[in-house]
View 1 (cartoon, one colour):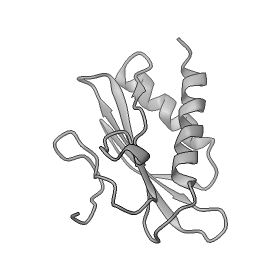
View 2: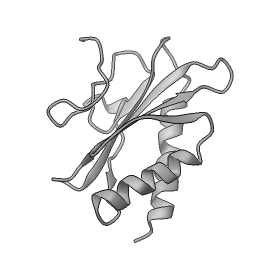
View 3: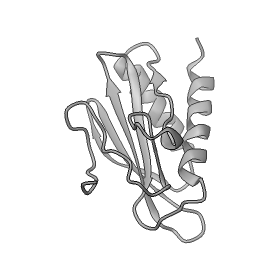
Length: 129
């Protein structure tokens, strides 16, 4: 696999590597696949809600923001490794795609999947219907 990139290319976030330290809504790897999030009304409302949830997460910093993209760095609790968490706001499908991946190492002991499950639960509870 090619070296991963940050950002969105042709409507897609970077793929997950073969190592088990990544999850994404756009991967074809079953063990790393998660469901995208539905928009909460419009793009701006959805993006604001995502940022509110991120602001409540410890050791998380938004480093890049554009109209349809957010990139955050999350420092791991114990060793302070940096993980990249990205969000792509797809206005055509009204969904939020995300990818959470460790920068180094092989296994993350399920940290990225746990992080994004918790993020999804918090987002959905704040979004309501």
